[in-house]
Each structure stands twice: as C-alpha cells, then as structure tokens.
Image (cartoon, rainbow, N blue to C red; front, side, top):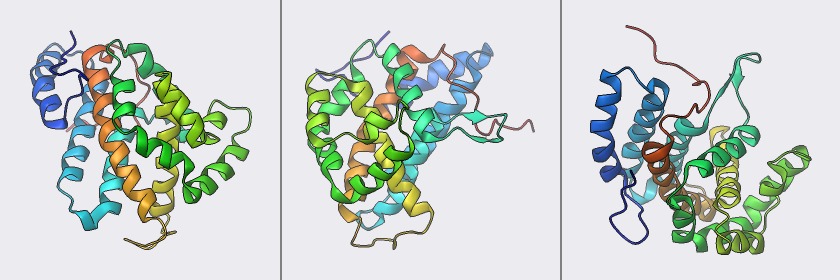
Amino acid sequence: MATTPDDAGLLGPDTLRRLWKPRRDAYAEAHLYGEVRVRVHRAFTWLASAENRGPAEADTRLMELWSASGALFATWDAAAGVPVPIEESIPAFVSRLASHDHDGMMAAACRSVGTHLCAMTDDAYLGRLAAARARSSEGTSAEPLLSATGGTMRDWIGEADAERAMGAAMLRVGLTVEQLSWGSATYGGRQNRHAVKRCCIVMRALVPAAIQVITEHGYTDDWGPLCSPPREA
C-alpha cells in the first residue's frame, strides 16, 4: 500500500522511518525479510548522520549519503570475496528498483533534482572520471550510463526513464566518492566543490526515494547477499 501524502508522493527520511518502524517490528516478530530490514536500517542510520552535517562538511555528508545508498544496492561476490563492482551492482539495483516502482517515485525524485542531474552529466570534472570508466566498461550495461551527457539526461527525465537517469547519476556519485576515499582530493578542496555539492543534493533525493520504493513494494524481494551480514551475539 503506497503512502503518497502530496502530489509528488516523495517522503523525507523522518517520515519514511516513522512509517517503516511498525512494519519492521511486525516483520521481525514474524522472522520475515531479514536482509531487507538490515539494509533499510543501515541506510537510515547513514542518512541521519548526513542530515546533521553543516555546509562546510559536504565531503563527509557525501560519504555518508553514499554509504546510505550502498546499504541498499551493494551485494557480495562470494567467489571473489569482494563486493560486486558498482558498474555491475548499480545497474542491477536500479533495474530491480524500477520493477517495484509502481508509484513513480524514482521519476519524481529525478524530476525534483533534474537541473542538478543535467549539470552533473555536463560537468567537465565528473565527465573525465566517467569517460575513463566508460572505456573500461565497454559492452556492459554501465557503459551508456557512464557516457551520458546533459542532453541525454534531459531526455531520460522527460521520458520518465528513471532507471537510466538514476543509474547514471549514482555511477557518477560513486566515482566522486571513490576519489575522496582514495585521498585523491583535498578535504573541502576547490577543484571538486561543485561536483561534491551536486552529488549531495542528488543523493538526498534519490536515496529516500529508493527506500520508499523498497519499503512500500520491494520488501519481499531478494536484493542480493549483504556485504557484511550482522553477526550473532
């Protein structure tokens, strides 16, 4: 049963958490949907931390928003003993998410930050990172997402093709976070300020939308093996 209190139907993290709690408790009591409950719980904790960051903490906020999204999309490759690369896990995630998005939450979220999505895909700084990764992803489902331009993004948003719009955005955010996590940029540095701030704005819209789709319609699905399952006490 969808909860759509306004025209867009987009809910904020606090409202989502409040609506999820009684369902979570009921599912836990019935021993149902354990991995989804873990994913959503982890995502909420990272979102809450990100919301407490000030304007000067954009780098930290972005890392936390990315962790919130990773709690939802990341899966474990048992054979390799590592997480599945984002070039595989993100396209698979947005495709599965779209199959459950009966209320158009992904498209609504993309429209709400459409200007930033287009600017992100036109950004020269992010474009260089994406182009290099697109070459190494040739022939995969990630290649067209990494090769997207602002014009392509505008078309996807206009056509309500939220699967590709969201996938392209998340891959670019992932490249920005990757650079930060490798220490390849100065904390608060000038070079990537616009990219980091745009990524924060975009993820503050996309992550809650993904949680809403999962908790409203996708909670019965298998979202893949967790990267780090909870340990028994």
